[in-house]
Image (cartoon, rainbow, N blue to C red; front, side, top):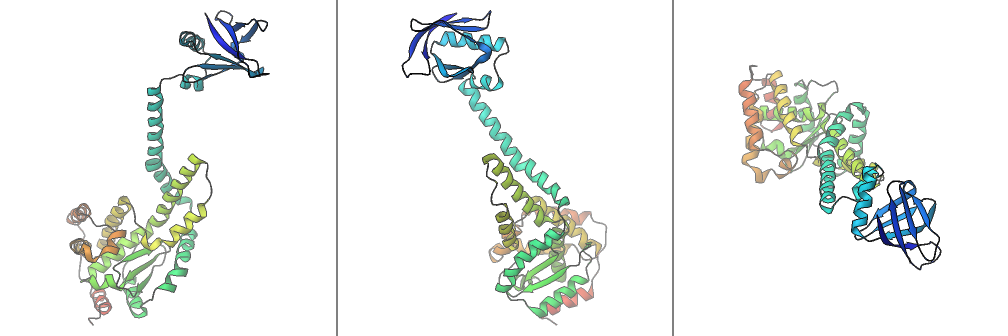
Length: 354
């Protein structure tokens, strides 16, 4: 098959009109010109780039020379012959696909990246936490506490009482727990990775029974036992690394770690982690023979007073679904609870009722 083509010799910018022949039997491109002797390019030596309305062909042996073909019939025949002979690379095959196929491939790649970012990366990040030593938990917490206690006042007496209260509960942890009460009208509580639970007086004032306090501490204990803070950090960091790999940006990892350390008190756990803390926290209460309905009562109180509990709800959003799941688990439980007078008395002292 033959066609008219434009030839650039690489020495001047003047185009030359040539007659181009494709010998598919010998796998050659032959072009004739009144200005040049006949030229023959082996197809195996050429590089081809398909543009919107033409094909540009260069020769590896003569990189400055260029052939430009605009005849659509010749282009279609030439590409089909190359493809039939297995001489098109995957890249070239992709280039010669239609616009609709390119768009479909683009959407497929975006979907794969999205699945990787939202599902695969978090899963791998959570599993990787088992390889991170617990000393890292202490590092994160210490970075946070350096500034936190400089800006917040600790209620020493209530801290001693909360510590006494917590010591009466078995949190099924190898690490010793410490407890702190912060003087603040803010209604909140949070757990640090180093097994420190901080409760604000604003939240203590809202509670009415010792079972509610036991529920809160048990819930936070599960976050610590299961290293949810470190897993959330690993998720954030893994997501950052994933995006950085996509855009070739590998700076700022330590900044991400520092930002997470600074915001441990405002950490919002995933729905999965909150459900985990609910379920295992309930089990801790049952193991300690504390009435597990204390958690149900606490969450129902929070749910019914959402406007008064913005801080707690921002980090521990209570939903009807969670409340229903808690109630279902309590109803299934066969462990019996009993009144714990020691916890009750300590709770009354915390509330200033004794």
